[in-house]
Structure formats: structure tokens, C-alpha cells
Length: 87
Image (cartoon, rainbow, N blue to C red; front, top):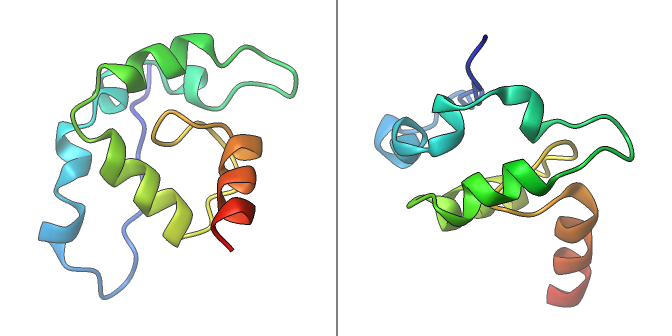
């Protein structure tokens, strides 16, 4: 079983991404966070709901335009909708 690795951006302060070390997804099966098209997101979202760094994760995904996977408890579609509503 491999762990979820979120790539660090060049020039990014390590403290800024320290939340990743506390993320529950890093201790879980990464397959759940990147389901096949049409696959269930239920398990990943359940982990996210209990995660103390959910907000930081979602902010990261929105700032870096993450297009795949569950981030901060939201799917790609949910993040796109959130971004459209914010404009």
C-alpha cells in the first residue's frame, strides 16, 4: 500500500505545507482519494470529515488548481462549482 504524496511546489515554505504531515489521507489507501470515473467518493470524504487539516487541504487544492482527486472533502466537480460561485 502506498501513501498519498502531495508534491511540494518549488520555493514553497515547508511550514506552509506542514499540514500535510497531519493529514489523515497520508495514513489511508490513496486509491480512495483518486477513484475511477464514476467511482464512489464516500470513503475518502468520510476520512476528510474527520481530518483536522481539511480546510488547509481544500485551500491548497483551490490555489493550485488540483483537477483530480478528493481534496478537503470535495471532488473535482465540487471544487469547480465552488470556484465558479466565488467569482
